[in-house]
Length: 289
Image 1 (cartoon, rainbow, N blue to C red):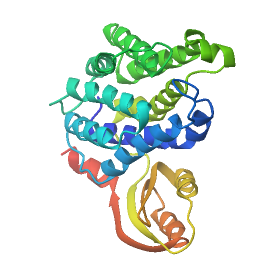
Image 2 (tube, one colour; image 1 turned 180 degrees about the vertical axis):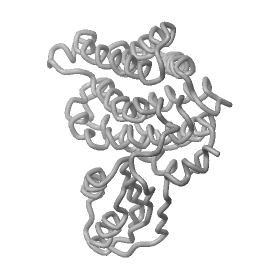
Image 3 (tube, rainbow, N blue to C red; image 1 turned 180 degrees about the horizontal axis):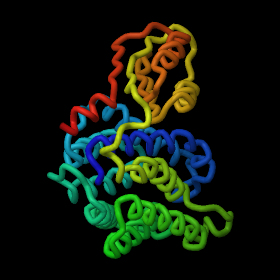
């Protein structure tokens, strides 16, 4: 089952994954126009939503999905960002009111997201993000109908997405001519791959977390700081790393056994404030009583 916390983490990880690859996605952006910004637009869309989610208190999966859908729409950039927000809008509508999402609800949510995207676009074009979400949702529905669990259902969706991605260069003449896949399709696959880490572990959500401390703080910059470098370091000392910058401040989040290392890294770049360190194992234990 996927609870609200799982879904929140999945979106944040999806945002982090596209942020890592946005430049390579920009480099293959030739359709519908070669403006080289598809990766950037997806990264800004997901990144804006992820930043808002960091401040959102986790509740039911349906409530998290609804909140994220609104944030994705507000932060949507470019054609690719809008299409992703439509996919998630359909997903959120499908899981509305659910405290947790099982395999069947996950598959139907992806299918509804696919339908929302196709129906909201005047002239849907195959060989794009639409093809990826269509094949991903189809594989997820098939897996769930055969009794797959959440992990297996999402794995089927990712597998379908990857297959669809490879087909895009044969569906659009301009892509076939250049021997590349569609940029938006590639971006969506990266996002799904990033999210898959949480979904693959969701069957064990009731067990103790791998790391003890949920560590969050804000850095007020004094020196030149690389958000990507901070995020990479956080990933070395824990999981669920997130770092987002706005108006001269950086919000940091990581699950780690060594919060002091995260704080020390932050001090390299400036002053720290709003430090929050929670023992997640105690929280999990309390939730079980």
